[in-house]
Image (cartoon, rainbow, N blue to C red; front, top):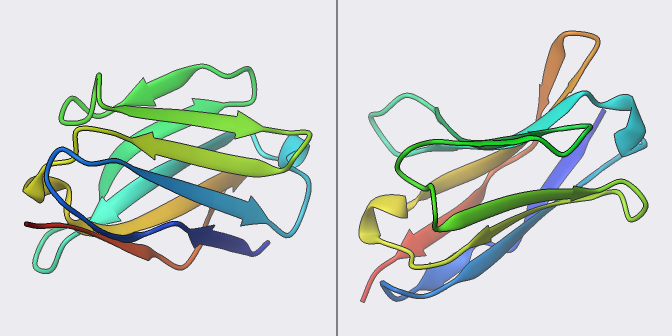
Length: 114
């Protein structure tokens, strides 16, 4: 399984970005999909996950600002990020879980800076 994330970039504090992730196989084969992020010197941390029944879970740090969604028909996973803060600066990775194995895509860099 190959996952491809896109949409990263530089944005000013308070701005918005939309990350997308596509996969090399149908989303219907994945139970949970999600986004993690990592900054230098820190462990990778959960940002948000969404199940095949569209139940979403968010890290406390992003609740109310980020929205995760998956569109099985279009085979795309989206992370809509608003009210971005400098602490959101990180490399963001999309993930997909199938048969208890979690696949990781290459990251996309998000930089929040004025």
